[in-house]
Structures are given as C-alpha cells and as structure tokens.
Length: 201
Image (tube, rainbow, N blue to C red; front, side, top):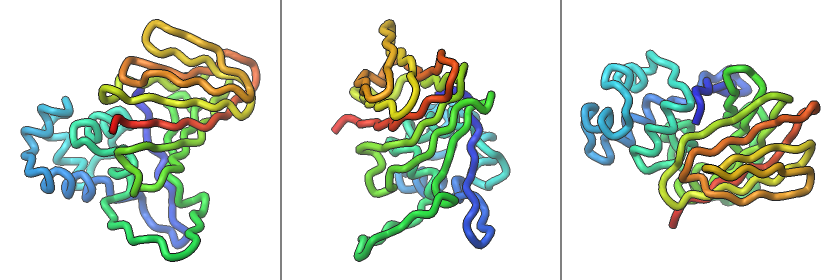
C-alpha cells in the first residue's frame, strides 16, 4: 500500500493510540523471530523495528502492511494492540472514535477499518471515502488475495495489474489483489464504497 500515515482513534476517556509496538513484539516472539529475521522478511530496517516495538516511531501503513504480510496476520491485528478477544455474549456496539482509520498523504482518501479482529487473516472490510483526484494505491498482497469493491456513492476507477474498470454507484468490482492495484476517483464529486479483502484459505 502507499505511504499512508495512520490516524489513531482516541478513546472516549482520552486513551492513546493502539499499542502497535506491543502487538508487533508479541506476534514476533510468538513466532520465535528475531529482529534480524523479521527485518529480512519484511524489508524494514532492524532499527526501525526496534523503534516501533518501543513505541518510539509512528509507522506508515506501507510499513505495517509489510510487517503484517511478513508475520502472516491482518493489518487489524497489529492495530488492535494484541488485545485478547473474548467471546461475544451480547450485542457489542463500537463507537466511531474506536474505529481505526487510515488517510492518504494528500488527505483525499479515508479508509475506516470496520472488520473485527477475530476475523483477521481471513477477511477484512473497510469504509472507503475518496475525494476527487484521490488514489489509494496498494502493493501486491499474498498470493490468492481478492478484493471486492461496492460503490455506494459517486464512481471509482479500479486498476488491478494491467486491467482497469470504472465502477459506478451500485456496482461491485471483484479483482485480484495479489498484483499491484489501486482505487482512484477521477470524477468531480466525492465517492464512497465498501471494500472487502478476502485472504486465501
């Protein structure tokens, strides 16, 4: 994915951002990986990994995508701070401030992470808003990954490998996400969509 800085949601009581560093260290140690090995797998420097684990660096989405792919987990698992999940026994209501969000460098694309952490690694879904001229570009995900984009308002242009299609209001595009792909808004009005990412079983 492009170099997209994270927008960490604040809790109702002024809580800080998710403990990405703690989650990264927990996942790395669970898989018995050294900093050197994870650095090699993810293409992220050892010093940067160390800073992230100590919460001294604010990683971009591109870095988090590389780390999640190297660890074989979904991005949401890193954003969750490694918090254990308890079985649902009642209706759980998630407030808007508790939903992690991503923003493109030019501020024209907003991606809200709607999928629950217990489904991480299987499929995720997002609310996507793209202003005119905005583009959300992604590097290839793991082999077999597919995306499903349902446009709820306006129109978006989807590129997957060498193919390109314009997706209008009410239409859904299904395409390979294990190649370079992007979602852009070439129109004059804002567009919104639901984006579902399905990982290989």
